[in-house]
Length: 79
Image 1 (cartoon, helix red, strand yellow):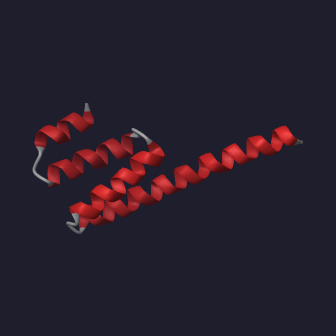
Image 2 (tube, rainbow, N blue to C red):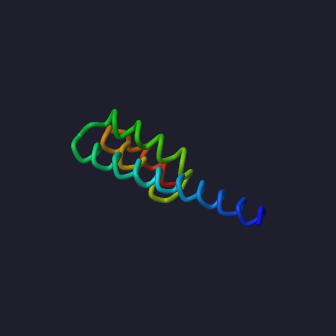
């Protein structure tokens, strides 16, 4: 039915956003581990766009801030 198709379309879009967000988190973590703060920040922005303020994005933001030397920003990300 049309209603079922609409529901599947929404679910598919939600699943795609989730997968894009997880991919961006992974890429950000790899960049962070290799010391590439610029790429980590860009991929973190993409992760936040797709996942919002999920705990994993908040933790990643805190770790990135800590690596960049900003303890205050790190604390703020976790509050």
